[in-house]
Length: 229
Image 1 (cartoon, helix red, strand yellow):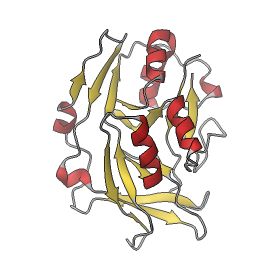
Image 2 (cartoon, helix red, strand yellow):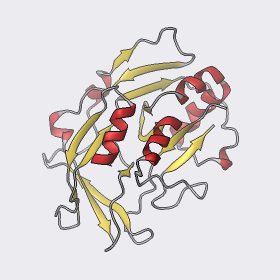
Image 3 (cartoon, rainbow, N blue to C red):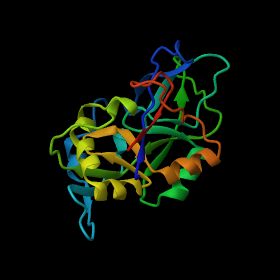
Image 4 (tube, rainbow, N blue to C red):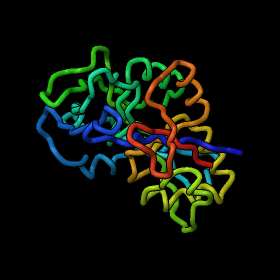
């Protein structure tokens, strides 16, 4: 059966439940708010030959200069180490080790921008390089109605997933094609990253941390991984 994985870290804003969590973010440029609409309007369509059922593929542009750098402020309990992947927010945080694995799996041109992870005093806490990962492969999947089967055995879908994942389940050809994509995001739902079995295996072989499976329907703080099938 074809399948892929949903990568989205359940954030612990206070850091009290699992010892780690993003409390806030800010851009050194002082720019606030979401990416401008023209950013999303400038996405480039990637021709699919033959076309995929109910699906278009696009490439997001590189981040605008004023939005490029962003610092994540963590609540970090003493003795807790930063994981290699923290997939929360518009861009995931990945370590140098995780970046190396992901780049070896996918040559789509995803954007990695070196950054600082900071504490509440805005002091750097990462001793090794970390990067903001912008997954540029964006899919537009038709919203055709329906419900997600076996949803309570997988994960709690968000509003946009409720609209597109039933279409994926009901079309085996589309689901098979999506299962082969290394990394992708859904249009208008860019906080969630989807990865293939192959990518997950490579990350695990490299000992990449931050890939804790959900142990409940909603996931618990610090958990990040669920299987979709």
